[in-house]
Image (cartoon, rainbow, N blue to C red; front, side, top):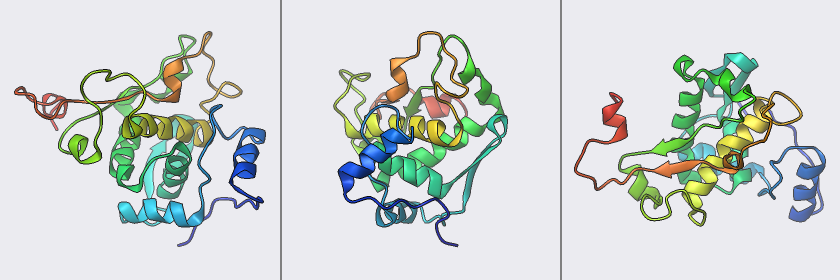
Length: 193
């Protein structure tokens, strides 16, 4: 099955960015144009067809497909090799134990993604000094991809269900990595995975 998302015709990449601003499809930061070729590279990285269901967010009556995840990952500035982490994170968001609807709280909460295991080193994620800081592409763009996905596919944005009083700067990206060289068990092992 092919792509099902709407296609837009724009004169160049800058006009694409402006289109996303006009249509409220971005979090306020510029986006990378999600071309079909680029989206396909992301799908190829996880060998999933566009219509593969990654998650069912029942609280928002939204089905997240591999295509929708790939589009938002491209927009966020991810690289295709980040897709396995993104798939796992979206599956986690959809788990009933996560209680997705708490994201609509007046307290402006936002989920933090913690990546653990050998993928941390493979992707070159920051797990040391300045772990919550900016400047590391995998950390920044993985978190932003999830934010854009929720913005665009689940209406988790200020003009829809996001009703926090003050907002939250973590909304742009909140993704950290666990140090893979520690002597103690990883968070994934501690949680039973």
